[in-house]
Length: 240
Image (cartoon, helix red, strand yellow):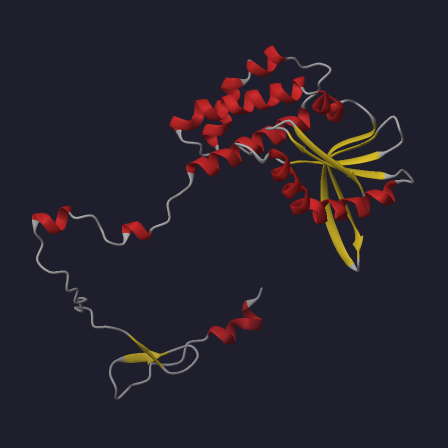
């Protein structure tokens, strides 16, 4: 269907003889140079010896090292995030969560987690979900409520542009406050947890503010924003 319109753009010209060497006409004009069929690149690599063949490549130390630890953490976070979208704290319990460890391990394996990291990764998923189940804040976030939505997509006009957002969790509590909560599967090991959480709030503040601008159009309720860190059972909140 396109060819009658654009075919001329791809038409090859007739072969054009060149005084500088063999060549054929190129689509956009000028010669298209080709090396002879018997051409072999000259590589001065020196004689092959036992020493030269066993020496480590000099460029290898410049290759980036793939961070399996970071990639595994990301997969763990993705799975925990997905499980929280489906978790019903009223009907689930710790034994049922732990019974799914083999299922979590299979999911992680299918998504590229190396075999030597599978057990640890699956255990972290289980412990994170159990911790949320035990956490009063986690249970409050996941309880049934008014205008209860999870993984809720919205689109709307923000400053003349169409914004598309997804609320991890949103509901109206008993006090008439509309909550918009984002899950963050960040982890922090060592001291300075409060400082770390404060930095995460500043890091995601503008993102959640965009969420709030759309959430305010859903009803007259005041909007509060929250960040929940399920792997650490940590929480930060502020009014929009």
